[in-house]
Image (tube, rainbow, N blue to C red; front, side, top):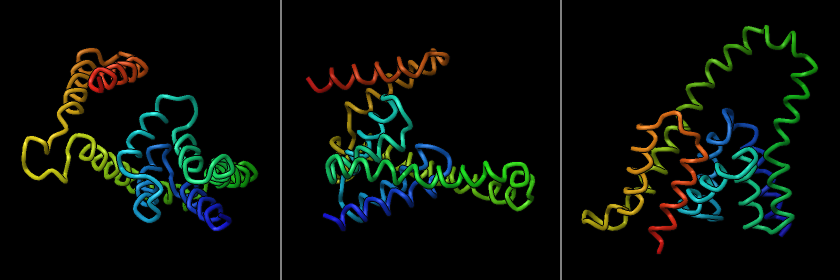
Length: 186
């Protein structure tokens, strides 16, 4: 069990250190954890994203807590949560100490200019992967069952609602999605 705790700590520390750009930037790291350790599958990752987006708190922290709890109980949740926030705390403490000098450095500005496209690429790749896995059944072959019809209908409904009412609050979109999910599960 100690090895599992160490692995959780390492993986989520690494995620917290390199997932620059917020909660969505953690998705590629979580997908890799799924592939390497089998702690959850892509459907569970999709569910975690939905739950993390609709519950209070930062998305990455919510997902790390979920993975830690499902993998190693309460102590696993605590370890993964603390591990994902530790890099931010360390870096912010250092930056706060040297803030005025730090933000003026050309190298720092260049580093962040280079990181931005990489973060966007990771997020787009993760979103495309989730989009495909949510709307398609890749293992079904080329047939009508290839398409996840209920999810496509929910997606279409939400797309129409959001394009017709672009100022609608995201909470209402989440509630509509949850209602559609309940209706299709009956």
